[in-house]
Image (cartoon, rainbow, N blue to C red; front, side, top):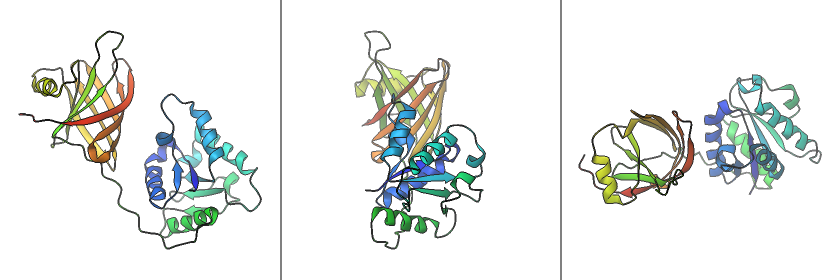
Length: 267
């Protein structure tokens, strides 16, 4: 399977996520930092390793990225270093414009593809097929992006350690059909006790609206103690949430998997 490194600016993340989905559907193996670097891994080392292991690099360009300083320029420099060691005539670097923009001079020796134009993705597939030694076939129209669906007929839970004590805490989330998310922390992992816990009145529960874009979910819940931000992915048809959290009061961060448990609520 052809391995493709997606070089991009953080400001183009939404475009690149959609591109990754289309490449996966076409049978390729795109590498994207937010999906393929695990918490705790050395970012710079994993980027270098991924570029080295890739068969081809797509350098995704936009008006913002070509003028932006920072890591994306360093990443392009790494790509060019590896490109210099490729056999002559090899397709290794493809500048991929996400919108009408200038192509940086150091990338102009390679013919670009304009993904924002009609037929642009088809032309990209032809190059990928040539690199992978596949016959060129008419591309299948891309499937609509996966739509994340959170379930409201139960709750999501993740055990989050002991915080230095002998008590184990469970982070809890509940979603309502009206677009509201509710969060909190309990010392119990028993479903019946958690249902009772959600029914309690008062300011212990954080609440706020949630948004879903494709399979991505983001929201923030607030109560009298502060605000917690959540962001991540809805997977397995709503059976799991892979989330990153940030407590804005103490800057405490967590990452983990919240798993769904069906439950009956009276309110």
